[in-house]
Image (cartoon, rainbow, N blue to C red; front, side):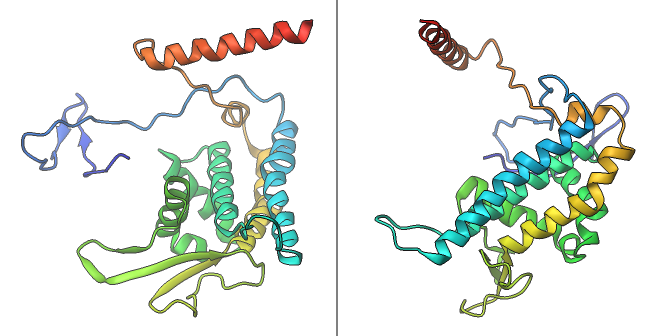
Length: 254
């Protein structure tokens, strides 16, 4: 996992300006955020709309149905979960994609912030008021660690706040978890999905279909993973996958 040390800027010649102090006798790699290139372009804005409504949101609606099924009959041979974290992670994944389609921002975080500012905050202003903490705790925490991240100010344990999610549409949202012994912050994953869906239905869809330019068709398309030819491990693994594909095609033609 990359650790951001500090931001710095460059002058017109590309030289660092006010470069931050770094650890002595250490090696650092400067990383730059770059979007993966699209495989192609979507055929139309209507196709993008169908993908978002039927696939992106459709998968999340399936989770909602699973939550309903769990609440009705949780007794199964092996334990079932409430999908609260999984639904929250899916919502932030969907938010990141919508922000990519919108195309405003230097990176995924700033693009998501802009989508929230222009569309989701029109449903509930609180999403914008705590966006950075919300994004890091849930999107980064669940995707990379399977848990929402608790949060505190570095070096001050007294500021620590527990963070969680519940799967109920009428559950606590942007407030404390009263069952938690200390300070806490909790969201309703189902409410998050409902608000995200509403931001699309009432605001973003019209922008997509009526105001966007043709570049949106490439931004909405699947991304292409380009493997460095010097990365021998990945090149070899790609050869294995291609061999599986070729063998499967041959068997399918028999």
